[in-house]
Image 1 (cartoon, rainbow, N blue to C red):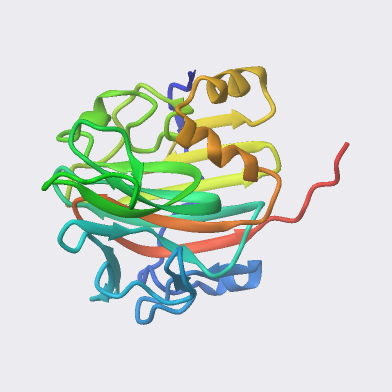
Image 2: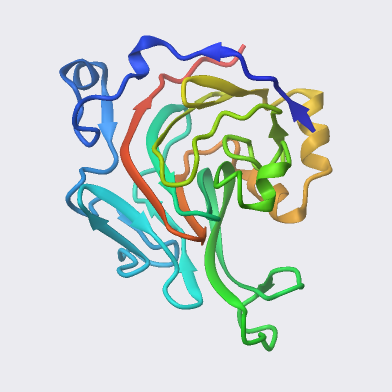
Length: 260
């Protein structure tokens, strides 16, 4: 495991604009892109098709909300692809909720999550009455969680802000369920940072021995995401348990750095 004790403060430029779903004049001049306009589903699609997964994800009151419908849920993907970028977003989660933002997403699967069993491909098992069916994406994941109520909040590599199952930290930074959090992901070639509420919680060199060891010891579903590290890929929002709300989803493409 790679662990970082958070302590760095965010730069002043991270302050949110009065309307989170608009770019400021400074952001427009700097080349920022608005991934969610607060009104439409433009730029987003289902992992398995070019259509927006209506019902599972909805636009309401200037927010993008995701939640299961019955016993089914699906991730939500961008139509655009990205490799080196800075991504900012605001989020809040329902009590007990579990979600995430994935990046360098390269594939998706329809899985069955049955009680007490490992995830299985849909159609390969006879599910129990409480099984959950999900279309999930594979990518590096910035974990979003109600740390207080969800058991994953007690583990450094699965708490809010962690690089899911690959890098963690030991500090309480997330705000309680129902309150807004501000997050930031910076990916520049092999350097990766996660920020949460103005604090840097993860800093990783993707080529380091420590990261490679963490990857080798990670579950297979997490290792699958590592094959897309050198390619432009989509960003995805996850629904898992409980509702999740997003606003202010903004991205700045970083210029490619020449290889040494």
